[in-house]
Image (tube, rainbow, N blue to C red):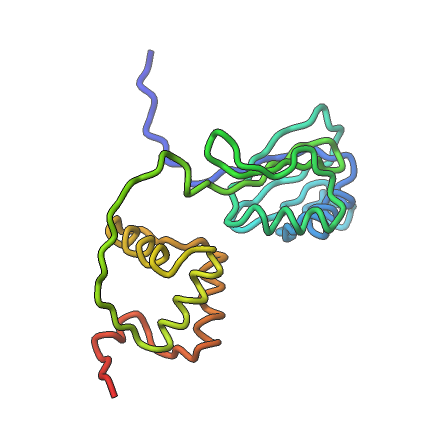
Length: 209
């Protein structure tokens, strides 16, 4: 057999067949929180028969036709609980309530207008056996506004300040960011709230009063 080539594939676009494209687009954008990416019609000016909706950086296609069965699509999101509350408030049909799963994801499932099943979930960061540690006191002095941001951030993430600092440090040691895109947007709000107008290299220039 021939050797398969090395394939680069950065993303995929799930395609769902829907009986009424206009109704499906309305449902996905107004009920589920997707954004409309495009509508396509052939010939131009005729009713659209194909379209795209996005959730975050994921784009999904909707194609006019006859649905032949409930397709299943999984979305890994930053905060499944927040989206779950939004969907429940919009009267979306929930077929599986949100819960922590044995496969280390917290998720839930809904059914759309055409019988397709969509699952939304986020990774459980506390999965796995307890890790016994010993904590030590480390003298730490932080810039006042930065300390206020850290306290708010820890509260937002339902963590202690100690655990929040440990998370940030552990991710830094692995050259990875500890925050989801939603959390990063929240941090920008906290920076405005606490008047943080310096960049990430400012500590080299800090001089105490």
